[in-house]
Each structure stands twice: as C-alpha cells, then as structure tokens.
Length: 309
Image 1 (spheres, helix red, strand yellow):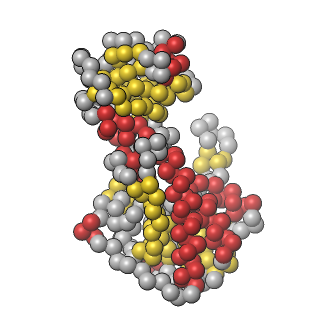
Image 2 (cartoon, rainbow, N blue to C red; image 1 turned 90 degrees about the horizontal axis):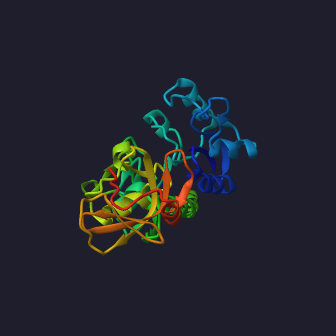
Image 3 (cartoon, rainbow, N blue to C red; image 1 turned 135 degrees about the vertical axis):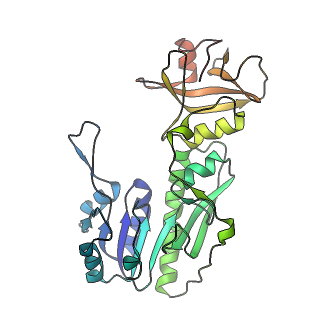
C-alpha cells in the first residue's frame, strides 16, 4: 500500500514509524523549518529529521492549495495518506486523491475535544479517561467517521507531558490496527454524534494565568494540565513571573485572602485558595532554574503573608 505521511512534532514519530514499517511510504510532509530564539540556527521538526535519517523524501510547502503540491500528490497516487499533528488544513482537492482516503490520529475520544488542544483539555477538565481516535479526514474540523478508538486512564499524577507520551504510543498502536483493517478492506467506521461534539482552541496566555480565587481542584488541574508547556503562571509582589509546575491539594482551611502564602512547610510554600489550599512543589522564578518547593522555602524565596496575583 503506497502512502504519504503528514506530521510535524514528536507526537507523530511513533505513528510515522508504524507507517514506514508497514506500508510503502513514498513522501513525508512537515511544516516549514523554524529558527531558534537567536535566529542563527534552523530547527528541523522531529518528523523531518526522521525522513532525513531514513532517506525518505520530505517536502515543506507553505500552502497546501498550491498546484505544485497537489500535482506532486497526484503523481505519487497514494492509496492512503496518514496525518498526525501536521498543523495545516487539507483542501478537498487533496482529500479526494487517495484510494482509501486520508486518516488522522487524533488525541481524544471523539467527538469530545475536536480541535487544537485535546490533551491539555482532558487534564484541565479533570477527566478520568482519555485516548486516541483513528478517523477519516473530511472538510469539517475533526468530524470524520471514526475507524477505532484506544483508551487509557488519567490519574492525578498525570501531567500534560505524561499523558502526551502515553497517547503518542497509543496512537501508533491504534494506527497499526487501522492500517491492517484498511488493507484488508474490513473497516467499519462509525459516524460521530455531532450533538455531543466539544471544541477546543489553542491554549491562550490568559488560560495559563492562575486565578487564586478558584478552587484547589481547578488550580491543581491547571498546573498539571499546562506542565511542561506553556506552564501555569502567577506574579508576586515584585511583579516577577513565577511558573508553577507541580502542586498538591490540602484540605486545611486558612484565614486571609486567596493567593496569600499562609504557611511554609518542609515540602514547599502553602497558598490559600477558595476551598482550602495548595502546596507548591515545583516552582520556576523568572530567569531562574526550576526549583523544588523545599528549595524555595530553604532559600527564603517566598514568605508568609506574601500575596500572589
């Protein structure tokens, strides 16, 4: 089965390996190269690096509607196109080319969390379950028929990072099953129930700012749902930007205003919130390295009575 793969970040790599090992992979699409912060070094996407390392042709078009791009795909005449976190919208002219269509590995249990931030959203909302959906791409946003799903548990110890890593492997497992079904022409895809669809946009800076008037559950999920990127943040009275990467919920009630440092413990500073408190366990002050809560206490980087905003 001749295939084309489209993807960009690390999340796509396990699925790309499955396509490379189980099909006749002819071409890889990935997003344009980026330059690092100093602007003096080009950064290749993980998918591009895989293509270079394995002598697979890689192209990086700015626009998918360009005639040259469409002509290139038609020339290859793939049986199937596989998309995993590519980051570009595909026009109908491309969707209609492959014999078996275009399939996508989406990191949610569709129709829940269609859109750009499904992994963040599962943890931000305190979900107990997540998974991947192997689905057909159509013109709507993540609305195509679903070939199969793979599910996994979310625990309170999970972060965006740990769930991301679990789902990228789960996506590859599901994709390998889907490829076998497609090749055997045994797919029994199910339509999504649009009435149950939810949509998630890219995470904004506003979503990452901690509101200490929220409950401990909301803030706890916000901290782990944005770890490692972009990181939930707050400011102290010096207006320093402080990112919080790990916390734990405390049932103890404290007097005073929400957002106040109310206790310094061996494990870290304790912050009052709407229905109890949170102990901060991993903290990064602006321009500094990530520190444990204990190091912050020992270094006297926070003090009882200090207010966070």
